[in-house]
Length: 310
Image (cartoon, rainbow, N blue to C red; front, side, top):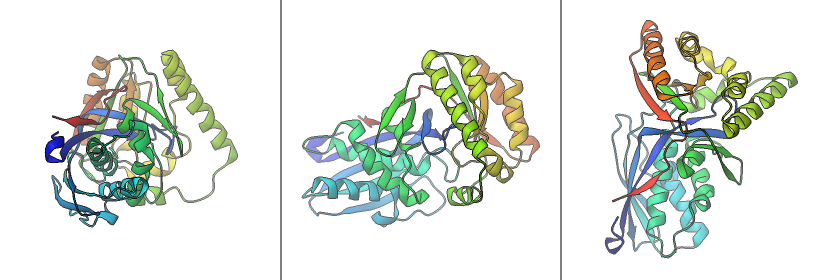
């Protein structure tokens, strides 16, 4: 970053949204994959996107239709800034992967722009602006992806607050991304319809066990609770091979496994990295049996936060 030149670069990691039991409110960051945004401070009181690289699918350059652009528009308006921003985005997360790609561009741009402010805001204060950006892609303001990217690790994201959840450093996630695309809006459409009250009760109990198990470092509690009875049954048919991949993870000792974000990626939690690495081989083989090559991302559940780059 060079404040003298009025330019900053920032990286935002990928994420596992929902974590199965925390639809739209719980997520954790993923090490090793993410987007980079370069933001320049400009005299014109506007936000513009000059380039988006790293994707074969064209993304909108109009700021109002782009997650990063909309986030900086919200920042400018809230702070009544007399200057504007120009954004370059380098995509490192595949589109439609369930790994938080739209959120990562938004968070990276905000963290870079914040570094250019005369009085940078605390990290958590950027949350409302990330929600404004994320709404462009998903149609709603939910923080299960942007929250973990802002703070790092496992985060509970309500409408107006981010709460970081302690997780043992040894616990790891294996996240397997098949070479397939599942659009977030299509995955959300699958959730239409009636739900039984007993499903909400069961999901609430499972979420409570996962949160308490993480804070206590109690793998047995997490193992008991990490089962999505509300959303997964409705989205699983959209992901070919999902059942086999999930079973492969559980057979390998996972505390639980489910759909990452809107899918089609699948995540599983383990008590150590070695176990996660071994299980990922079986998960990849299960996707291969369904006809899909896939990529593996191994990460501590207490993953990294977005950061300004040198």
